[in-house]
Image 1 (cartoon, helix red, strand yellow):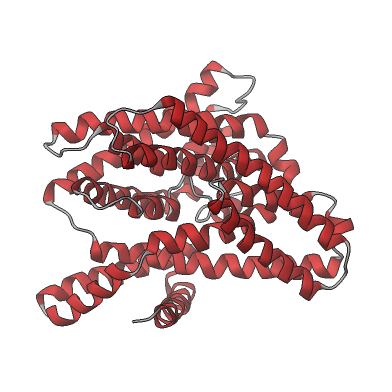
Image 2 (cartoon, helix red, strand yellow):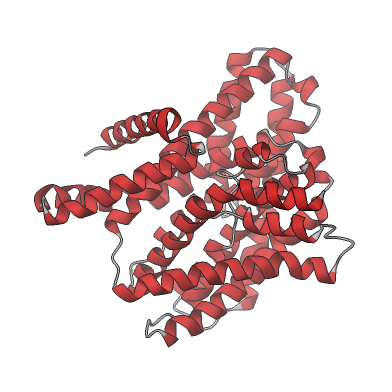
Length: 414
């Protein structure tokens, strides 16, 4: 099956599942798609007992699809730019200190906590995982994903402070998480049993600082190009070209394309927007990127669910998957509440607001893409399964209940 036919299947399934969800199930958009895709995946898996021929054919096709490369090299840049383009800088700026703390120090602390705990837990269960692999899992599962929760938070009428914090943290910690992951993965590929902190630090600075600077340069360049003309067709095309070319160049130069797209989107969507784009252009640009966002998210969450078909697992992995969910949640609690206790003036949240931020920290497609990019090894199979377990819990349990949790805690707050 060629790339076009795969795209046809994904778009068709997305449209069909979206209709079924909206007409009958009425779950939040991406959660409904993920749920229906998971049901279809389970049906495919069950066919190994009653239609082994077609099951093997489907499994062979799915195993050849390099989902991690599609997400990392294509989807991620579009999704991060679209998300940041629609984000109001003023709301993020008001919570910039806690956002920075959670997105940088929080991801680093979470990586260490999750990695160390998983290392001792897995070996206690008789599953051999090296510390480096465990830290890599900590890095890929620590970034939160705003996609599935934003609409729910809006309906739950949470405060703008909470919404801005979750959105801002999610936009920036994706980039930070990717940088830490890449640095750890480079160490793994070099065959080192211990982390070279000097090499790690240089690579981190190159990816992170370089990505931020490159994103600013792209943003200002695009801003002045948009400002110099008034033709919405050309301006929409320019935004698409800058995302595609800018993300590709970032990766080629070993800069963080994720951070570059976030910065560029924030700048184009907020910096003197009235001067760079007419009202008509703003409408078309925003509608275009909203549509791109919806389509790619639909394809992304359907693709994630199909990972279930190709995962290799043993029975002990189920227990480790449950424990991993607990470890990730416990780490999230520590990452949010520790700064609140140590730096109350910086992290100015009430206890109930902090609880909403904890429960609203969903994991999604980025974690799946990162774990699938790992080199083949027995450890990779374990990490793929427990990552999928954490993402399923995050989307299906946290995603479906975060609105209720937010409403209950908000009422208690009042």
